[in-house]
Image 1 (cartoon, rainbow, N blue to C red):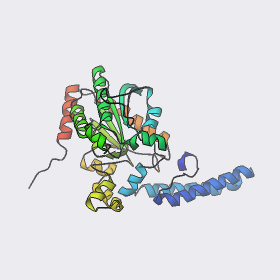
Image 2: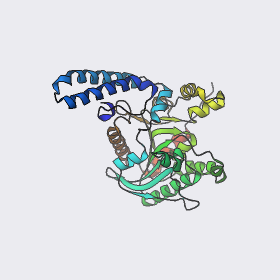
Image 3: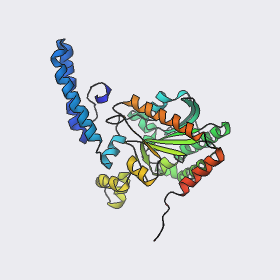
Image 4: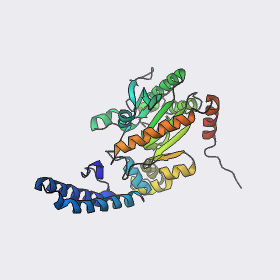
Length: 328
């Protein structure tokens, strides 16, 4: 069912237009049905349209190309970290500040409970409306955001609590102030310290996973991606600007970057893909929350079988082995 309630979605992706037309037809018929008061007069036609919609939805989302996947990952109605926290994390207590410069709203940290596990949650935050997006720098964190994340991860290590990170960023903030305050150094330090943090770490790319901005909270024992998320060394627009000197080639760049979940599993940069509801997480957020929570609980249960020293060793070796190659 479109958007979980047969109502057409307000935001249109180009490849979804035939689907949205069907959704509008269903909504019109349901409106007539309510006004007429004779449900049987429209039931057959509505059922037929719903079947056509489900078939078209499955076919459309079964063959998305890389650029279409990027568009779905950026859908305004797609669940964000704040939504997953509200749905999956009980007793969430947010922690602020990096104890050096300030509090970066682009990264949220706090303690809470997911299933039976007390955890530290670290998540990118993009913002919902224009005011929030500007305040959160559209999910692009400053160095104080990464230092806040590391400070809270060290606190979790002190109490022996696992770390869960939700990645959703086009990249780290590229401004002059961020560079002056040590953006690259802050991310590099997180990579080193997360690689040897003595608690289990799990990460999920829930939307966008851009470059060092994603890696800054993405060194984990297990890494998963939502089915229609993307994860790459650079955004398609950034890649196109470098290779072709124009952002108009972003779709071509997306294909070359192998940024989809399927491609990332193939090359070994992630461990698992979390299937999304039919038509993407924006069509059925509740089902997406349930899948993410179930994956986190099961993964933490699996990681608890390892001695912590062995876990840290495996994590280090996992990332050291990435990118290795042999010359014939």
